[in-house]
Length: 320
Ligand code: C5P
Image (cartoon, rainbow, N blue to C red; front, side, top):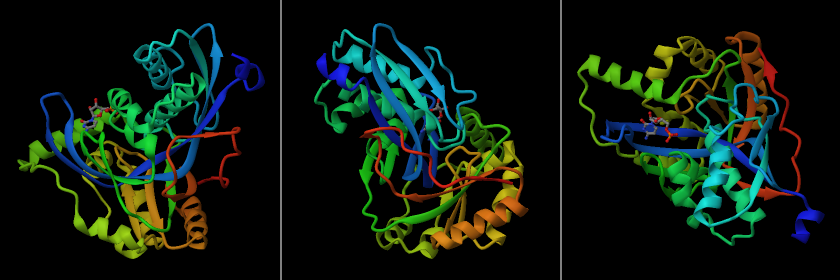
């Protein structure tokens, strides 16, 4: 392929996500929970580069590379191989991942890399597929992968793979507290949620998204959005990782308009009104909150996109 000589690979930039609302319904027979969720991308990015190669491989570098598998269980590699299989591509690819999204942090970092690998290999092999056409493969790889193909703000239902975009104008400013010692396993947090519900004898209704959040997002009214953030996994994440209670309390007492554990955690997202407030909160959290990496980001941003090259990481993070 002559193009491969001029341009050896395709680089895709992909953001992480938080859930502005995560309503967890009953456990299904397939082991998943029925969800009503509002996904929202934030500007913390991984880059995935796909290069033509005779053999399959994946290499991982970057700020959060530690602990990411580099064998056949790497989700980006699985994604690339599944695309090749599905469309009869008789070529392999070498993947390079530059990681900046927290690992096992509740921000769908692995799913983001899988979505990016699909987009990168689709472009590398010139398959001419739309995002919608990539969705079934994405959904088989993980519940959050279809959302990361699109990005923005969207309602997810089913196990999270069925999407409907949300009309959201403007942007939200976030400060993220990222654990520097350990992550949380998503299945373990769902299992803890089930355990807590069973112990409380709680009835688990079918999940329904709240109209208030969708209305608040239409105008991006920070106070209104902050007041209705909801995560049904938060109690379970705090039960497995009690320092999260202190993190939530620290950010709230420092003036955040909203505070929520991101997905299955342990990343915590604080909503603030302006970029200046985000700087103030990051400085305050680094000085007074529990030890962690403090990052700033705005959302929503686009999902996996082909770019010219790996851009430098966003604003510097603080370690408190
Ligand atoms: O879909 P994904 O592979 O990302 O999900 C990881 C795990 O999270 C699942 O194996 C399941 O334990 C849990 N999960 C769930 N209900 C969902 C999504 C994920 O129980 N809707």
